[in-house]
Image (tube, rainbow, N blue to C red):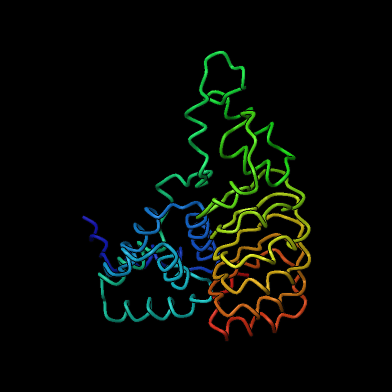
Amino acid sequence: MADPVSPIATLKESVEKQLTSARLQELTRLVIEAHRGGDVALLRAYAERAGFGPEVVSAPARTLFYRIVAMVHPDKLPHLCEDFRSAIEREDVQALEKLSSLLAFRRSASVPKRRVDFDIRDYREEHIWDDGIWGCVDDADVESRWEDAEGLSFLDAVKFDSVGNLDIEISPFEFSHLDGPLDVSHYGLYDLDGFEFCTNISALDASWNNLTSVGELGSSDHLVELYLAGNSICDITPLAGISSLEIIDLEDNEIEDIAPLLELSALRFVNLRGNPIEERHLVDDLIQAGVVVVL
């Protein structure tokens, strides 16, 4: 009879396969997407699996996000490798189990596609008719409704995301009552004209549009989270004036100069993957300032 494989050997093999920079990048992206999509349950599940105490697991979503990203960021690879070697030397099964669990984590919950807190959302309930006069939206029409939304203006996208294609006029005053997060991703937007009316938005997701500039955001003083991945943005100078920004996702744009980010004293996290950054020393300056940078 063959000798049973020891738990140490099994865990060692499991960790060795996954303790790579590529795997940490995958985990970092998973955490970013979960936070951007408002999947706090997934973040809490991951924090528990990583061994965080209850005070962290129950912390506000942004705090939880910071802590997890700081733990699984690819820059942490040398530190995790040292923890791994130490656990092997000590034959610490518990530490190896936690590390294996941390690296093997997979998405187990759906990230909401859209989340908009809009004061006039009650219109959706008031205008549900069977005759379709208003082209009212039900679950069966969702797919075609998304196709129809392509190419809208920013304000049209906000309205469309809130009340579908109902023929309802919305005044700038009503847009000013938006608060919390706003998701206008995947709408084919070419600009963010009208964002100046959304004075109380704390998080904006305008990812995967056709944006080339962010000048419309420069007057904001409430934005804490900003997601602009998958656009064609070159100049981020206007962002330097948004002192409240803590989280920025700029992946897959055309940004060469990241100096404006150094003006953001509250910045804690930035994703810069897929940009032709020219002065790499500015990345080091951000890291020195305490910012978690994903490249």
